[in-house]
Amino acid sequence: MSDLILSMRNITKSYEVEGHRIDVLKGIDLDLPANERVSLTGKSGSGKSTLLNIMATLETPDSGEFLLKGVAPAAMSDRALSMFRNKEIGIVFQFHHLLPEFTALENVAVPLMLYRSRRESMQRAEAMLGRVGLEHRLNHKPAELSGGEQQRVAIARALVNEPSLLLMDEPTGNLDNETGQKIIDLISSIADERNLTTLFVTHNTEFALKMGRVIEIREGVIHSL
Image (tube, rainbow, N blue to C red; front, top):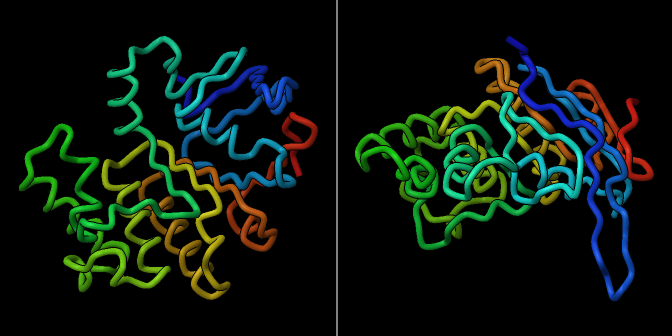
């Protein structure tokens, strides 16, 4: 059995903007083996977020083959894909997207409640928040947390289902360097514990080099650095 978590072959994606076609991805080939950490870099507008959204099954490519754990997301029904995404993919964005009216504990428990009891969801969420160092902030709402704490809640939410793939889009972009470094160290530690495949989109070269293999999108295709 292949140890590839993600495989892409000749992935393309274009958009129509004011009557003009813009080719963003022009033939992406990429393999992510189990337990590999990869940093994705590229200039603004190079297609990093588009590629990440395809990996996250939030967008579909125009052409090419995309397999996640040997399964083609494009062949799934919307309901099956939603469940698959919830269980297999963790996503952390630059903006944490926490629900403001929910506590940290409730925010982390949300992905679990689709198929687990409320009690079990809360127990697992509490354990995950403890792992990211927020056991003392369970009942605080996002507005009562610092930026670094909010991002830790977002990381806990992304990991609470024990996904196979963790995707991060500039997760340290709104943090100072010291807090950003703590977030990188935390993600690396958890990735090692769980044999977690991670892809980290960043403009920060220093952080990119600390996250393992570095690749770049340039002119719509992937280049190794």
